[in-house]
Every structure is written in structure tokens, then in C-alpha cells.
Length: 239
Image (cartoon, rainbow, N blue to C red; front, top):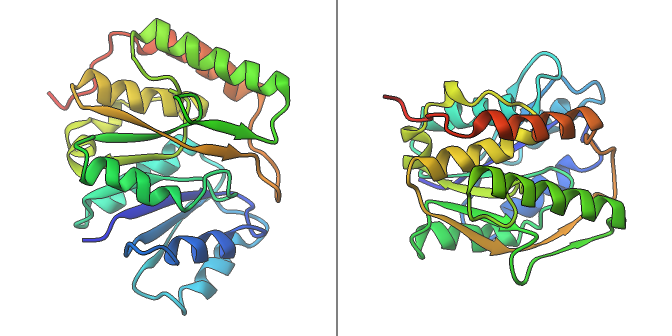
């Protein structure tokens, strides 16, 4: 079964057609699931139109209201687990994540033995583009803080470009993932790490969005900082 690329959207009409087209242009037969949180700009309508071009491989899950990044991915994971997908991706809609790197993340899991492949900005070879110095310092500081508190040897725990093997999501109790914003990314990695899965970082260049509006806010950052303290020692298995 092809890998499933899950892309949460809220007001991404400027990017959605281009990102879907870019994923389907790859050599691997990816499927795409758009999880749209009631975008008032008509993002879901555009996806429905694109489904005429890709009726078997482009899927749409619509939700009412802006319910948060974490719950969007959890909904996408559950949707995919009801089907036969063996690899699950988290990916942004705004080209911050280069679709070309999907192949490298998939190879890390499928060929190199990783259970979770992390598109990392801060491991050797990783980079960021078009970020202010303040944002880089904040992001790197949050990553170091999370790694130290959780004793997790990941240089970019806040990264949002991820590939999971199916068995990771099947083993994890997704009901125990409690955070919905920035902290969600940290919690998913920590849950996989605490369950004994192999995490591997793959260097990527993260490029800030050129179209649309960033969803980052001080509330999301605050949740992440406080959330890390609450994660430590929690159990994420189904037993």
C-alpha cells in the first residue's frame, strides 16, 4: 500500500494545489490526505476540485472549526490506520517542507531501519532559510530545552516533517497524546522514543512560507514550554 502524506490545512488556498501537485509528481506512489479545519477561504472546495484529477489518491477529511494541529494529525492517523497504509507522513502545506525530501524520509524508514524519520533542521547538514535571528534562537532554544528535560537525543524535537512506520502508531495510544499545538510535535517524538522505537534524523532545509499566514503564536510556544514538563515520565503505550 502506498505511503500516506497527511497535510492539515486552514486557509491554504494559495498553496494547496501546488503542494498536492508536487507530492504526486514524486516517483513514489504517495497518497495525500488533506485534513481541513473549516477553512473560510475555500481550501476544501479547491481540494474537491482536485479530486476529479486524482480520484483514487487524493482524500479529504473535513472538520468543523479550527481544532488544532495535533488533533488534525491524530484524525489523519486514525483515518490511515483504518486502511492499509504502512508509512505515515506529517507535512506542512506551505512548502516549508520540500516535497523532494519525502523520498529521503521514506528511505530512512523503509530501507535504513528507522521507525520514525525526522526531517531535522538542526542535525548536521540541516538548515533554515528566511528566518529572523530571533526566530532561530527561539526555535533552537526550545529544541535544546525539550531534549534536556526529556532526555531525548533528538536535535530537532519540534520538527514537523516526519515519517512513521505503521507499527509506531499502532503501538502508541493516540488517546494519550494531549497537546494540540507546537507541543504536539515534541510529544509524538517522546511517545515513540519512550516506547523504544528508533528515531533517525534526516537533514533538511526548512524554508519559511512565501504565501499565506503563519499559524505560530505566543500561546502555542507557551504550551510547548510548559507541556514538556508534563510529558516527562508519562506512559504512551496501550497497556
